[in-house]
Image (cartoon, rainbow, N blue to C red; front, side):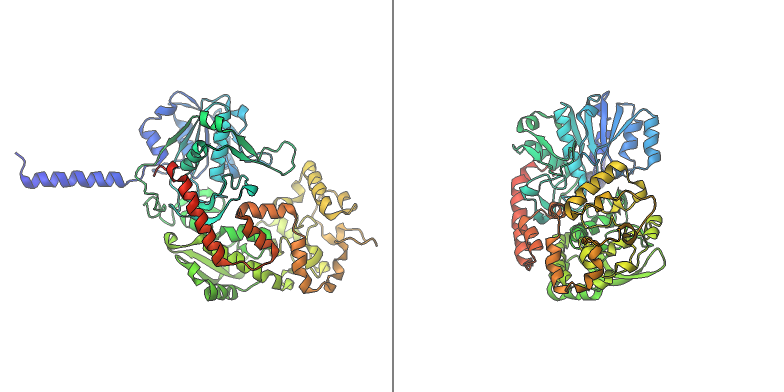
Length: 567
C-alpha cells in the first residue's frame, strides 16, 4: 500500500513533468515530425525554406525533408539570397534529383505555376523577423497565392515571431503596396507569425493585390488573387505549441542572444535580429534617401551589420548628444554609445554602437522616427568636403573588404552638385544617384542586356546623347577619362565650376534631383505617405505627432487582425 507521503510525491512529480513539458515550445516542424509527416505522407512535395528553418534539435528542415522516406521532396523553392544556402549544398540536392528554383529574381518574387504542377503539396517553413519589409513573410504569402492558383494545398510550419507581439511603426498606405509591404495598413512591426499573416490574407474576405509599376517587360513582382480563389484555396497551418505570443525568442527560452540563427547574410544570431529591428529603418531608408546614416561594414567582429553605424554629417558624440538632449525617452531598452572600432584594414573608425538590453521595453519604431527626423534636419547643413575622399575605384573592385567605404559618397547627392574636386577623385561613372549601385560597380561582370537597360534609364534623367554612347569597359575607369573633353556643356562636365554653387542651394537641389524611382524605394520601406511627404518637403518632422499616429494605427490593425491569431 502506498503511503500518503509517497502518493503526494508521485503527484508532485507528475505535475512537475506536466508543467515542464507544457512549457517547452514545439515548433511546427517538431509537431510534423512527431506525427510522422502524416499530412504529407506519400506525397510529392515542394518546400519553400532557407537556413533559418531548423527543428528543436538544430537540424535544417531542408535536410529533414531531403532524407525522409515518408514522402518525396521534388522541388526546393529558395527565397532571397538563395535561401542563404551555399552552392555545395544546392549542388548536392540537384545530384539527388531535386529541382531547385529561386523565387526571388529580377523579374519576379513568387514561384511559377508550372513549377508546382508536378507536386501535390507546397510546404513553407522560414523564420520571420517580425518586420514588414523583411522579405520572408512576403515570400510565403506570394507562394501561397501561386499554390492556390495551381490548385495545390499550401502548408505552413509555423514559428514564433522573434519580437513577440510588439506592434508599431509606420503603417503601409495602399498607394505604396509592394513585395516589401503587401498588406494595407500593416505596421512596420506587425506582431504576427507567418502562419497568422497567411490566415488573415486568406480569410479576411478581401482580394490580395499588389501592383508593380517598374516598367520591365515580363516582370511578375505584382500579384493578384481574387476572394474566390482565396476562399477556395486549401491552407493548413501546423501551429506552435507552448509559445506565449508576448514573449520574444529569448524570453520564451528558445534561444540566447548569442544563438546562431542564419536568417540572411547580415543576420546570423538573435542579437542581430533585435539590432536589425531597432535600427534598420533609418539605415535602409536613410541611406537610400540622403545617406545620413550608414552601417559600418568590414569590421573585424562578425554579426555586426546593424550594431555599428555612423553619420558622415555629424560626429558620433554630436549625434548622441542631440538624441540624449531631446529624445532620450526613445532609448528605453537599448543603449547608444559613441565608440571607436577596428576595421578589417587595420584602421579605426568613430561610430555609434547599438546595444539592445531589453527589446520588450524598447521602442524601436520611436528610435527610427527620431533618427530620420534628425537626418532631415541636419543633412542640408553637411560639410560636403568630408565626402571628398580619394577613393581608388580599382581598389574597391578588387578588394571586397574595403568596397563598402565607397558609400561615404552620398547616394542621392550626385557628383553633379556635391563633389567639388573631380580631378582628385576616382569615381566610376556608374556611381550615380539614380539606381541600385552595389551590383553595378562590378563592371566587368555586366551583361550587355543589363548595360543597355541601365543606359536607357539613365539617359532619361541625364538627357545627354553622348552619355548613352558609353559602353561597358573592360577595366575600371574614372569619370575624367570616360568623359570626352568637348565644349558643349553637360551637368557632368560642369563639375569643375562647382565651387560657384552656393551651399544654401544644395538643399533645394537635393530634393529636386530625387528621382521618382528613389522616392518610391524609400516610400516602400516607410509606407506612411504623410511621413514620406514631410521627409521630402523639408518641413520639420513632428516626432510626437507621428509617434502617436503610428500607435493609433497599430492598435487599429491589431483590432482588425486579432481574430486570425492562433496564440
